[in-house]
Image (tube, rainbow, N blue to C red):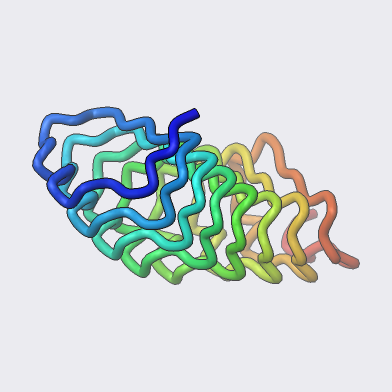
Length: 173
């Protein structure tokens, strides 16, 4: 494991970079210039101490795979939904309490892992993610699911274990 604590601002100059793996470091933030890495398709930042992402993160429109597993993220930038090519998104083991409104713009998502966070609810717009096949919500504080969850007709697997659910939405027959 490395011990990198900070990424230099000029990382944004690496315009041909397609994949970046900075997993297992000690990063707490990323420079705003990270959003300039317009050729990125895969980002692995798992096992760091990231508390927030720069607002420029939404500029990374070509990213298909994003792994932010095991960090300290409390919220996602408002621009997050601009990453419209995201297909695989791993956000488990963070401190997320809610998702940004723009989350429903991630229409290409197939895998969404939000397990082991602090989510109490999901936005009604979650039902817009019509390509979603795998939805992992285990170990949150979710008390109810939005009715729109019934619109996720591509779902193959959903994990709701370890939540505070007492009913299932009527939209799922």
